[in-house]
Amino acid sequence: METKKRRKLVEIKSARKVFMTGRIENTVLKDVNLTIYEGDFLMILGKSGSGKTTLMNIIGFLDRLTTGNYYFLGEEVADLAENRKSEIRNLNFGFIFQQFHLINSLNVHQNVELPLVYSGKTNKKERWDLAENYLELVGIPEKIKAKTTELSGGQQQRVAIARALVNEPLLIMADEPTGALDSETGTAIMELLKGLNREGKTIVMVTHDEDLLQYATRVIRMHDGSFVEEGAAG
Ligand SMILES: Nc1ncnc2c1ncn2[C@@H]1O[C@H](COP(=O)(O)OP(=O)(O)OP(=O)(O)O)[C@@H](O)[C@H]1O
Figure (cartoon, rainbow, N blue to C red):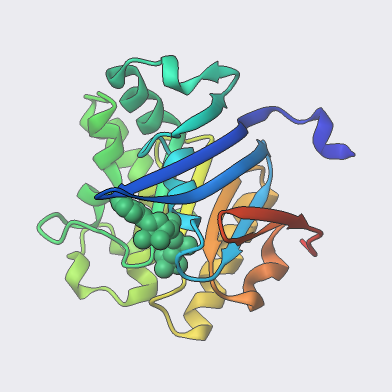
């Protein structure tokens, strides 16, 4: 009930996504309806090939629907020009991946400040201070000048989370963020994400791991292009 008062960030209605392989149609999303509210920690579960990444890509403006509607903050995404879409994506989405996707030729600070460079923040000192703040938030301020290759997997994921947060996006999109980590490090990363969610960050996460459901406030289980929502502990 409480969710009704919160801002609707994402509203997807009667969505279908069809991939064509030669002449063969593969309907990956079938009549999907989904609303994401500010403050949700939404977990999307499903077997390999069930369409989780496709749904994440659509939510994050990296792919488009075949039919149906996607409204972001009430605006129909299909009506937006490509440069406006890139702008909205850069400002409103922070992405976290299983393999971290850090740029190894840049040091930790340079990786974290990258979204600020893209969004045109020209003041170097401001970028440094913001990167420092977010590295502190994720627990590794002392690594600010380190090379990414000198870090453990957990530390690299913390850098990636700082990078995802630095622009203060409305949504954090996490695709199997603990998939490449041992279970203890994975738990630390989940606790970090849960803490961010408690402070109000909206998180959408894809996982195979049933044990992670405890961190979610909403759970969606995908099966054969459709999904069911079930209650969550979080
Ligand atoms: N660009 C594409 N072109 C054609 N088919 C695609 C494309 N992307 C995904 N698919 C197909 O869509 C289906 C769903 O893929 P998707 O990657 O969304 O699944 P998933 O649930 O994320 O799987 P995994 O857990 O293995 O990452 C698969 O059958 C896949 O082959």
